[in-house]
Structures are given as C-alpha cells and as structure tokens.
Length: 296
Image (cartoon, rainbow, N blue to C red):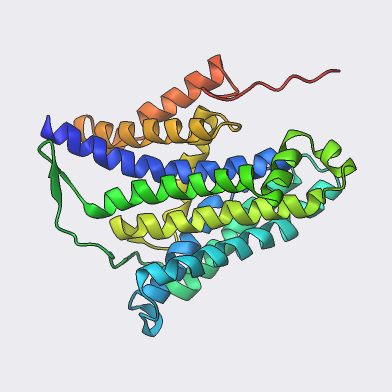
C-alpha cells in the first residue's frame, strides 16, 4: 500500500505538469482554433533558461530559483508571441487550414536544434530550491519538490482563470474565444488577443519547465515527450475544459507511474494512450469537452 501511495503521489505531480501544458493548448485553441505543436519545446527552453540563470551553467548562478521564475515566464511569453507572429499569423491570414501545423512543428525543431547548440545534447541536473529529504504521508515517501510542483501548477492555472474572469483584457480573451467575428465587430483587436493567448500559453509551459526540472533531468530533448503526452491529455479531457486538463493530466500521470512499476517501464504509456483511443472513439470532444455544432 505504501508503494502504491508513493506511485500515486509521483503520478499526481507528473500529471499536473501535463495539465499545465494541456492548459496552454486550450488557451490558443479557444481564441484562434489553432494549436502550438511546439508547446513541449517552450517548456524545454524555459527549463534550460532557468538552469542558466539559477544553476552552474554558463558561469551561474545569477539569480535564486524564486527570482528566476518571473524572468523565465517573461521569456516564455516572448517566445510564444514570436511563434504566433512567424508561424501562425500568416496561416490565419491566408486561411490555411494546415499551414499553422507545419509551421509550429518546424519552429519546434528549430528551437530544439538551437538548444542543442547552446546547452549541448547531454541531460543536466537542475538544482532543487527545496530540501531533498522526503517526508512521509500515510507511510509513503513524498519529495517536497513534488508538492511544490502540484501547488505551483494549480496556482498558475488559477491565476490565468482569474485573469480571464476579472480583468478587461481577460474578458476580451473570453469574448474572442466565444465568437471571434462578433468580438471583432465589437471593437476587440482579435489579432492582438490571439498573440496574447500564444504568449500566455508558452509562458505557462516555461513555468512548467522550471517546476518539473528539479525532479527530473534537463536537456534539449525533454520537451518532445512531455508536449506529446500533454496533447493526449488535452484530447482526453477536452480542448474546451480547464477541469478536463486537470483530470486528464491526473489520469495520464498516475497510470504512467503505476503501469511502469507493476507492468513494465516499456509499457508505462500504454494504459493512458488506450484511454485516448477509447475517448476518441466514443466521445471525440473529450471527457469534459463540448461538441461544436455547425450549421451547414
């Protein structure tokens, strides 16, 4: 039982990282109907920039872990805005249905190559800001950083939701997500809102990068797997539901850790991906998603 609880706690921490990345997918899909398939690379760049600022890479540390976080979030926002400007905006103007897919994938590959040239191809440890001594919860050993990951992921998603509900610009984002054409007719600059949604999406992914980095290794290849699994989480939970991102992330994280221990590490991804296929077959809009009705 203690081992199972430990696996569940680890799965919850991992699942919340998936949820934050999936939440970023939802932000861009809501405003523009597009997705940034380089979301995993935004996480990777955030982790590596954070390592350069708070670790011993490139002559550091220059900042403490906590002071480094706002810098990384700002970097992620700029990177997301750049992706929208270069890869997504031209496709939207040309009304290219698939142009943004290839553009964001191409930019993801470019970012990965840039990271390999700057930081190298080897994975590196990220210094933890918290004590590494685990504490016991119901007999299971829990790392303090795992708790920080869960709390940090919930806080960033809550902050974005409060921003969308309470601020004027957030309400413009909500209006654009509900009906882009109507929002444009009401005087909202929908192009600027889409850019902002991409900036916010990559900022949350960069923040997730510095959250997960202390509990794993940091390198140029860390984003590809996390981004792909988070996309599966977004599909399972529903691309229109924040609750769905959290539930889908927990399902993915817990099934991954438990299957890796009780079955084999080679099959740890199988249960969640089987659920993905089942959801696509039965409820393509996701467990908490709303099906779009189009009049023809």
